[in-house]
Structures are given as C-alpha cells and as structure tokens.
Image (cartoon, rainbow, N blue to C red; front, side, top):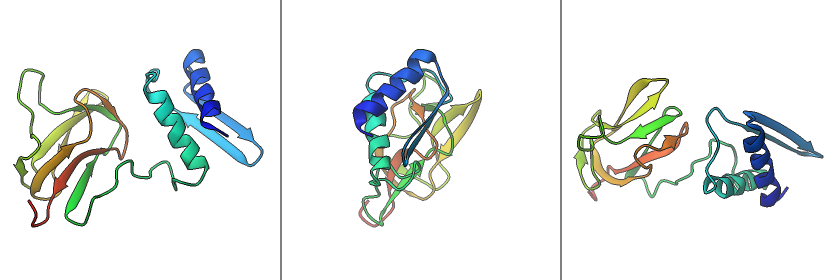
Length: 155
C-alpha cells in the first residue's frame, strides 16, 4: 500500500469523523485509530509516510522513536501520555526551562495536560537542555520526544 492510499484512508476517517478504521488487503492489514479531533493538512502526509514506512518494515512498531538519541551523553525526555504540551505554568509566565539552561534531576521541564489534569514532565538526570522537540500548546502523543538533555561531560 502506498502513501497516497494511506492519505486517502486518513481523509475518509476525517470526512466521516471516524475514530477507528481497519482495512485488510491480502497480507496487509492497517488499523488507524484516534482519540482527538481532525488532523491538520500538514500532519496527513507525515502520518501517511510513517504508516508506509511501518508497512515496509522500515519501522519496527508504532512506538518506534521519532527522534534518535545522538549518543550516550544525551537523554530524550518523552511524553508519558497523550495530551497538550505546555512549556510554562500559565501563558503569562516564563518557560520552566530554555535551551542552554542547566537542569537538575527531577526539575520541572514542562506540563502535559490530559483530561483536565496537569502532569509535570521532569528531568530524568542532571544536564543541559539541548533541544525542545515539541511546540508549546501542541498535542503530543505517548512516547513522543519532548526534550533532549546533554548529560555527559560535554555540557
């Protein structure tokens, strides 16, 4: 199944406002499922490419990392849940952390709001924030990389 066919399946889901779609075509089986609103037009091609790669065996599972660790001196902080990602406690306050900032183990990096609950995302180890991988106010998925922290001697 090619990218175009997968994009069409996703478009069908959006148009019919479906939350799940299962398709079997010979040995190929596709299950699409979502628990949130319609996808943006910029997300559709990215999602279709990922599903095509999954079917082609280029990605081992739906939980495969979207961003690879650079080396053993870098830690990816991933989202423990699906929700809305916020870099500050409220819109009128400063971000918890900024790129280049040193953080301590357990320090709050951001918040993921899920089911009206605010869940703190904390640093798993001391280091320096190298990259923020999610946009403020964006929907994040389970296991999605949110931050890259340099923990080795290079920071």
